[in-house]
Length: 549
Image (tube, rainbow, N blue to C red; front, side):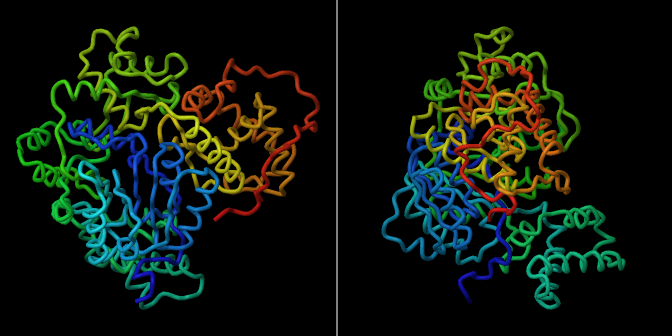
């Protein structure tokens, strides 16, 4: 077998960011489960199979410490190295296989080891090598965060993947490359389903699943479904494998998985509550919610936080909103129906988090705000964890000047890249120690703000000038927008929406934008003729007309 070991490499992987793997988020999740977390100040951190390297680069820039990672695909490793060069963060990146990485004699002892999705797509031998790396290189008290596709949620869909893989192997055409082969496999699955095949008619849930495959990113489909090894396992099997490396299950890494009210009705919550053994509890829970994907934390030598120690740890935590107050909502759809958060606690809590221009606050500081004093601390903690699970809140840290410098450099690179492609939708926050979701439109507006453009009109003129100077094209809803008045109107609309939704004060608190950027609300000044455009001097040239790899 060649170096790919059966792993799909016909298309590069997607550029995802996974906030659950942020050291600060992992710490919070451990504390919420009553487990002593590893230290997050200057962590020694390893990501195995880092893909395009977005997560590891954002975390290295924003968290401090020493970050190591390997991905055997050299194009992935090269892309990750480009991001590392941009930030100047302390990163050691390799294109080693797991066997080569395990054999290295220069590995440190790690506080954190993380893997996203890798476990599901590799051979039994490689899973064993991962366990060897963990056994030999994770410190006592350190943790592993592992995500994987799982049973029983995948049970009905597994044969669809097998059919796709078999079509690619025996009937796939080389014409059109890997993407063409994937399209051919998808068409064939539809053809078999339309023929009235009993497997599809007797499993009606597959109709929506197959339809959804058509709209999926082809790079994602290749890596998700078409590896030679495709191991859809159970939680119990994963826990058993990692126990050989002296690891014990600590908690689900996604905080909403800690909140049964979010995914279960009252009878099933009672069923789960009556189960004493933690591993059996997780297994039954997977059946109750028909779990397809898990992200779990395992610890080498977990130690319980109790009494004053637990209170001390909680009192040290600081929290911040990660979306503008204006975009939060109390009504949410859940697997068991609509959920409305209690306005009496969540309303004042969100107001308190947003107060003082979103500065991060401890629990005791939150209790001092109007409307918060009458609540039990445990109720406030529960609400904070719910808001964190929903993506509204994250734990905050006190950054160093070096953290700020690295985040600024990485964000400048990412915002310039956004002129060409929207494939990376995150920016690094030294306050979060990780990433803040920022779609392409936001990154372009931020680029103009970082260049000193203070009004939507100036920002629009600046962006138009940058695109014109670099010969790029602005694409909106699949259509090319003409540079000049048409593009300026589009850019101004993006900038006005950015301001209207209140992103700037929050991004300043997260130290993605400078505080001076939001010292007072912007008021449009009379603007000269539309043809007078700011000079984008100092802009580091990219080619917006060509997507970056």
